[in-house]
Length: 401
Image (cartoon, rainbow, N blue to C red; front, side, top):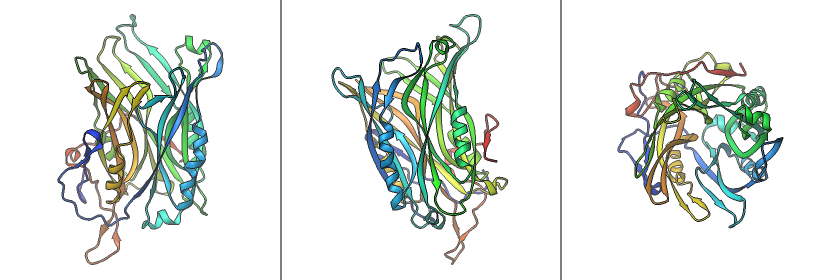
C-alpha cells in the first residue's frame, strides 16, 4: 500500500452497542474534528393490499416525504447531511389489526468547524424520487439446479445523479423509501417485481462558483454462505478494505454503498449465494486525472441487536457513541452498510453485522510549523489490510465527466 502516514483507527462495538477500542497508539490528528448531529424519526409504512394486476398502484406507501423539511433545518446552522439511514430490521405494528407499521430512520449530519473549505461552502438539501426494478432470472434446463437469482436495475438512479451533479450538486446518499408500486400482470409474468421506491439525496450549492464533482459507480459482489443448525447463521465474504483502499489511493472519496437487491445462487438447494453492492465514489472534476490521495479511511464493525416480540421487532441506533468518538479524531462517516451477516443469540434475538465506513482528509505537519504539508503517498489502513491489493471487479461507470 505504499508508505503509511499512520495506522487507521479500528473500533468495534460489542453486544448492546458498547464500544471497545483496540490498543492502537496514534499520533494526534491535526485536521478538523468532525461534529455530529443526529435526527431520529418514525416513518409510517402502510400496506394497501393492492394487487399486481394493473400498474401504478401503491402496494406499500409511506409518509416519509413529510419529514424532509425537518431534515433541511440543520443546514441553517451550518450542518450538512452525510446519511439518511433506515434502522435495519426494526418495525412496530401500529395496532393489533392495523396494516401499518412504524419504521425508524436516522438523519446524520456533520460539521467540520475548523476546515476552511467546509466553512466557505453553503448547501441546501434536495431529495429526488426514483424507482428501481428487480427482475428474476433462471438458467439451466432444470430451474432447481441451474443458476437463479434477481438483477436490479439502477439506471434511473444513475440518471438522477448525473442530472443533479452537473452544476455543482453533490450526492449524499441513496436510500429505499419503503414504497412499492405495482408494474402490472405482464411485468409479473416476466419476473419483474414491483417497483421499489428510492430517494436520492443531494447537497445543492448556494455559494457562488461551486466546484463540480464527477462520480463513478462500482459493482462489488459479496459472497454469502448460510449455516443451518440450532442457531443458524449467515456469513459474508468480502475484502472490504481492499476495495475501499483501491479508490482512496487514487484520490477518490467514498459517498455511499448501496445494496441493489441483486443476488445469484447456483441452485435452489445451494447454501451459498452472491449479492451485489454498488459503491459510489466522488472526485473534483478538475482533479479527475490527479491520483494523489486526499482521504484516508477505516472501517468499523458493529453488531446491531434486534429483538423480536409482540407487534414487531425492536432495536436502536446503538452506533451513536461510535460516531461521537470517531469524530473527535476527525473521522467523518461516509456510510453505514447493512450486511446480510446475522447470527441468532437467543429466543427472538439476532445480531446483524453493520459496517461503518469512515474517512478523513490526510494532513501532515511540517516540523515546527502549524502549516499542513501536502498529503503523503499511500493510504493509512488497519493492520489486517496493509498488504491487500487493489481490486476492481468491473469497469466503473462515470458520471459528469
